[in-house]
View 1 (cartoon, rainbow, N blue to C red):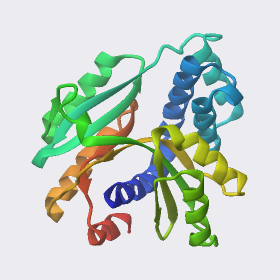
View 2: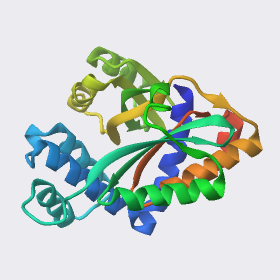
View 3: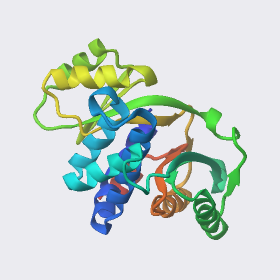
View 4: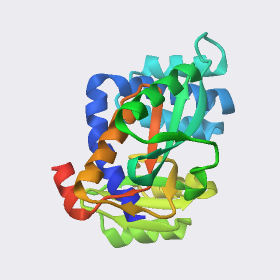
Length: 249
């Protein structure tokens, strides 16, 4: 799963730029609305909403914005007519992509995606053409400070995690999709602060390209990620350690 780990590192650094542009609040609001609409506005009874609100608070989203998004999702306020849809595509060089969107207008979203592919190469794919190449896993991150890596590993495994990756800046913990909330709760019970906890799509196999081709794919993914309606882009691209150092530097 190392390729996903590396791509996540790049995305976290890019996330800070998104916050400066103000786009992250729009995305977080839509995630909250979607969670509230599907599972209700009570965070104690709706783990998905609790996770979405936790992410919003971590991004310093104002409390009023969070409450308004919840009310829109439950129908107490107008404007909560959003839906989650995942598009499948191929980037140049046969790299599979899953593009998870939260939108109130799927025609607009699809048109924006096609515009980028027309300019950058690649193409949209039919439903099912790409999704089989990815597994759905729980994904949890913890910022690395002075914790003992062995303790983190044991806490996670004892709680039911499938895998733990120890990076220089972050611990990344993978779970089965139905164990995400259980593992997250156990880690918090051990006094650990969770940075991110969500379902993620992990590529079963990754494709490694040359530097020029890799940068081309990452540029395409960045353009897709800049679309307001795009919540996550999952890629089957492998990123080498040396290139990661250049990109993250």
